[in-house]
Image (cartoon, rainbow, N blue to C red; front, side, top):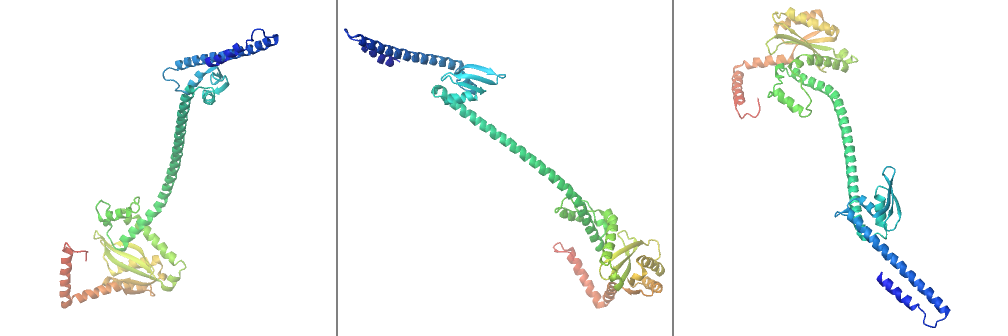
Amino acid sequence: MLPVMGSAIPAVVDAVPRPGASAAEWLAASQESAGAIRVISRNQLRQDCVEALDSLLEERFAALGEAGIKRPRDALRFTNNLEYKSGAQQLVCCCMFCNARVCSTGSSRVLDHLLGCVLCPARVKQPLQALRAETTGKRKAKEEQQMFIEHAAAEELKNNKLAKALQRQQSLGQSFGAAESDLADQAIAKFFYANGLSFAAADPAAGSYYRNMVDAIKSVRPSYVPPGRQKIAGSLLESVHTRMEADIQKRDASGQLMERFGLTYTSDGWEDCNSTPLINSAYILANDGGVYLRSVDTSGMTKSGEYTANLMLEDIYDIGPTKVVCVVTDTCPTMRKAWKNVESEFPWISCCPCQTHCISLLLNDIGKVPEAARTLKDETLVVGWCRAAPYCPSPL
């Protein structure tokens, strides 16, 4: 201000007229000096305002303490006439630098105004700019965190839906798995029946060959549980028998095969793993598979020709006498006597020996020849030695 005031003083001195000046000169000089005085007064007022503003600014910074401007709410320190409305949420104030009126919810608009105010000094703007950058960073981090939480919640919801769908699929798979297990049980049972295996071989104990086989099967579908001895000898036996009959009838639903070729009935004696004497019977349809009929326990019974023939006649009546055209058995004397009773009861039925049985008897007779007997004896020794050898690659 001193240079301004100094420049105005010579103007006042120069405006004084010289001695002997006219009235007009004195009037002009007085007007010029009055203008210079007004300039001095205006500049002095500006200087006073600046000093007062600087003093007030120092007071406001002193109230903030050593920390200075650290919170957005600190921007309110640089306002005047601060009033709160609507439960201390809405506020109205005036900028202490430009006296502009600001209405805000909180301090955000006040801070924005101070950053844009041309009269706001750098001492105030710089910390406010750093505070705005920090606040913006925190807001952005909070938004990213919220987005992450929402994304995680969406993923969790999606995973829950997938888990529920998978659970429903597993439940549905278990329903279908029951039918698959039944088919597998029947396949195993058929394996035992077709190969004449003892039901005791179905030992579920760990380490048994049967269990090892099952473990290998379960590696394909671990939830599969194989049938045990009782199931194979009980319900599966009846189920396989019923299905085989249904398959035979389905294959010859029209009855053309049966009408053209008829059925072949067969019966033979057998002993189970407990040495229980049995007589088994079955029938065959035109080389299209056999159907098991029954097994009769003959313990304590005399297997005479009449007794065996009665069993055979019962089976033939159950099948239907007109459907049977041939009876095949072995050639023991008991069966030969039974043939006569069957052929006398049903003249159209022919009884004949089993070809496999006849070949077995033929080979037994050949084995009785001295040369063949010596050869068979040598072969028996060789086979026995190979089976006992520890390095035998496979059983003979």
